[in-house]
Image (cartoon, rainbow, N blue to C red; front, side, top):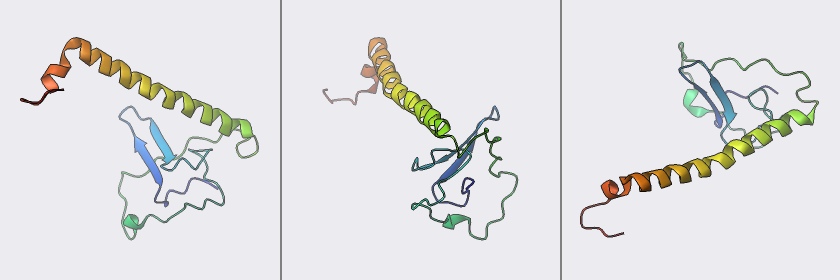
Length: 117
């Protein structure tokens, strides 16, 4: 089943360079951005869009499906592995930024007057 753009949990974001993200906010679509699970129990219609007329700010079309999508489990596994890599990098990057701010003296500017840490 293609991505359910009318689902409450579907999200699409287009960046200034033209790249677009199409995903399930609950992370229940292992073959996103192309497909939702056929029998997704979390599907809920997006109520805010009822009777709205969409202008030019519409969801961009999904990229072309790779061959074997839905038949080959390695595609979903590859997407999951890529997601794990990105998720693992987040805390490390935040820690590096925090350490850099502490070294550069940002901490003293962020303190409230009269407060001791």
